Length: 193
Image (cartoon, rainbow, N blue to C red):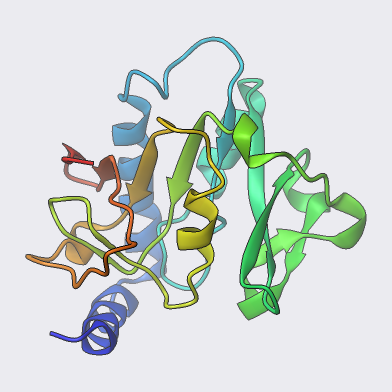
């Protein structure tokens, strides 16, 4: 199946979920994520989350939980003309964010606090579809593919997805990075990375 056809199919599946189902499944995903040993670290760490939009896994409660735990939370600001992400430190979910490129929440200009990607300890990644080998089908802009190259080696890449986004095989390109972990509402999958 082509990337375009697979995206269309998964969007249809995801969009069939009600708001209540998305929230309930997202809370189950948050509980699964919380079981990962490197996520439970007590010392302050720097975690970059995606901010959900449309029918994605809802990340707001996870972000707010990490802020409350004293972790440094980063969220992406996108630069569409360069297809680039700037990690920005989030201090206040309500005050710092506004709809940005593609209508995805992102830091307001006055709340942009850029952080060097090399300081990231854990990256929480969005995507359209994933397979059990950790291959990821993104939205087609290449933002995250470019961003992965800017991380220091060994930073865990953790994809959050609903079980309905897990497919038998994702079409891959030679430059695609595999996810290290997939977290769904039903299971945690450590991939070959």
